[in-house]
Image 1 (cartoon, rainbow, N blue to C red):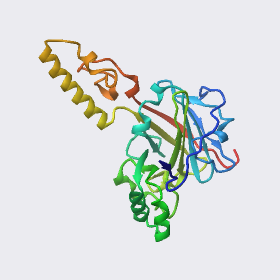
Image 2: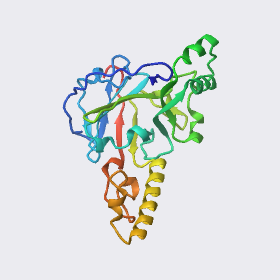
Image 3: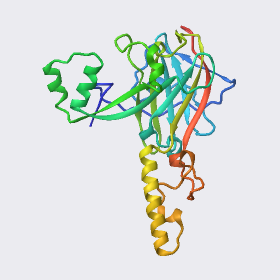
Image 4: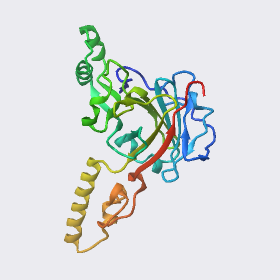
Length: 284
């Protein structure tokens, strides 16, 4: 499986050592100025001097930087429960230039597996004309992994700049059981509200949401629960939670348990948190 950027870029891993975690001294998170564009590759070479902040609930660590063109976000997960089902669900990054919480503006960052022909169709749908030679080159690989940042609400996407005007939001990750690194890039021109775009020195609110049971996981859970219930009725008893097994233990919001029985499973927990951000001005 070859990785693409969004087309043909390999993911490059890197050193995972980071500066120590810091607690925010104020309610406003100050983005740091990026003297040069950050290479979004799932590594962290350009973040070595970053003092990471921590979300108390998920224990996820993060840092923000920006230049005159883009906002860069680094996430570091040091445990599987904190990472949750990010690999499957991706992450939604919400924003508001007015400083209000809301989930209508933002981007859903998710990985997708595509065949060569699907990738060609996607590229051409975006307006790029591919020669037959280029198509043949793409078809040399059976499959590709795309890293996309798509609007969370297609109805709100009308005010976003066209793909030809600015590169779309993207991300890369390097996931492992010990420590996982995720890097995001969102062009400031894509952070639009009421016709105005974010700019260096501006304030905005950001929300991050990931994890939780996907529709496929819930369907599998319900099927297993129905099968276990049928077996329990046939055998005259038994603990439903034990019969379901440890893969789908929770039945409530975010897979964290509920009235249907079972034990909470932190691996399927949904995480959400919000921060107020001050973008760095040039040279600050």
